[in-house]
Length: 275
Image (cartoon, rainbow, N blue to C red; front, side, top):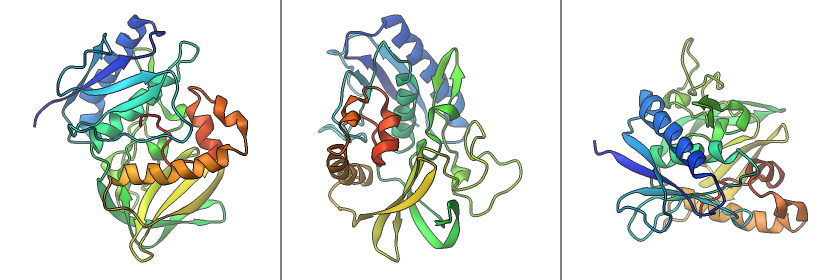
């Protein structure tokens, strides 16, 4: 298995280089020590000091000042290399968990098309429960447990929790870890401020369960395009929806690096800030 190299690079010019270097070191520990315990991934994370000099073959995670509301998902460039962008600011340390989220999801599903079949879920009252039949879930390693409070610390740097492959088990079994930190207690559990996307084969549509504002709901996203990655297509659908919704609340334009606040308000699929 070849080793993937991910590069963390500051394009804002405003972050402390020593901080960015320490974050890249923490992310390197996460992808070399924690992630391979559950996912077959071989990767390293390095600090790139010059945003204009990205080594060939390195998957860059660019720290940027701003991104349009509703932009999200990583996409493939013309060389078929994944990349990400994350809003970062000296005024907030939240970008470290965002960068971790993007690195983990790029490594687990580099091209946005990884699917896993498992038991369908539905909402009963305000509870998320197992339904009947099967869904084809889009594998997004951090979405079900993405809220900051479920993260953990490596050398003083907060990083994101992530699901394990057992998240898709048909039944709960004692002693099983469904996420790295153990915050997820059962298969297909979605924690507050998290979400999950799937294809409903019977309906022939993409759907998404969003658990924002303590009110889980299922949204129909429509028929997936065959011309884009599944992740890119879902992001495109939600970008259009978010543009309409954000016009109703000008405050959403001011979220800056508070990306998850925007997620809660406009219930988007993947405001992961790196298109």
